[in-house]
Amino acid sequence: MRITVLGATGGVGGEVVKQALDRGWDVTAVVRDPAKLRLPAEVVVAGLKDHDKLAAAVEGRDAVISAVGSRDRGPTTVCADGARAAIGAGAKRLLVVSASGMHTEGDGFFTRTLVKPLLNTFLKHGWADMLAMEAVVEATDLDWTIVRPPMLLDGPRTGKVASRLDGNVRTFTIRRADVAAYLLDAVADPTLIRAKVSIAHG
Image 1 (tube, rainbow, N blue to C red):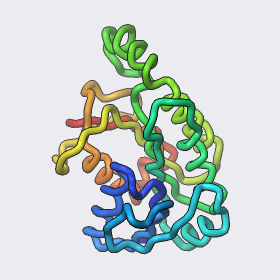
Image 2 (image 1 turned 180 degrees about the horizontal axis):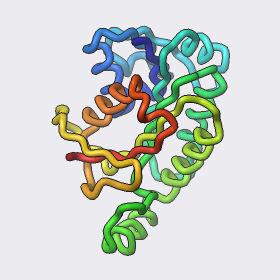
Image 3 (image 1 turned 30 degrees about the vertical axis):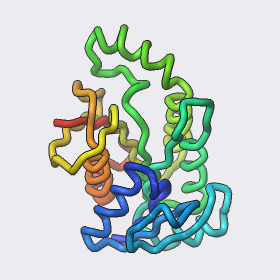
């Protein structure tokens, strides 16, 4: 399998690169600072507006995984910009990492009415960016998958992931390594094409 990873130096993106290499996949990592990626992947140094470099990095790939995210809580468009960049570069199979936090389908009463409104006061900018990203992706005719994890944790992969297409999983955390593994498994899963899937620790 040949994939391109945007956001390859982030927590999820780095795990995607590492695990894909462990599977023997051909990985192109798009980064702004190559010093931050200490893995034997093909590296393309590019920003999200470097169209020609991104197009070259995406050409001939089986899938593009965008794990782009913001590192602060201020207004941002980085997730939506990452999706637009992948689409503009010619991605055919596109998987993006969003979040389950701003969605309430399947949540219990306490989570829906108390927990998430409180979290929104702190995370509203990031969630707004992810909602915009989802809208950008859904508007395309690509073979896309939107993956919505809850709070991300560090640690080794557990292999225990629950998923739902019709609402959120009622657990509140997942390890970044498990998100990465799910993304890689989803690349060739036809049941997840044009699907919005919530995942969490199972």
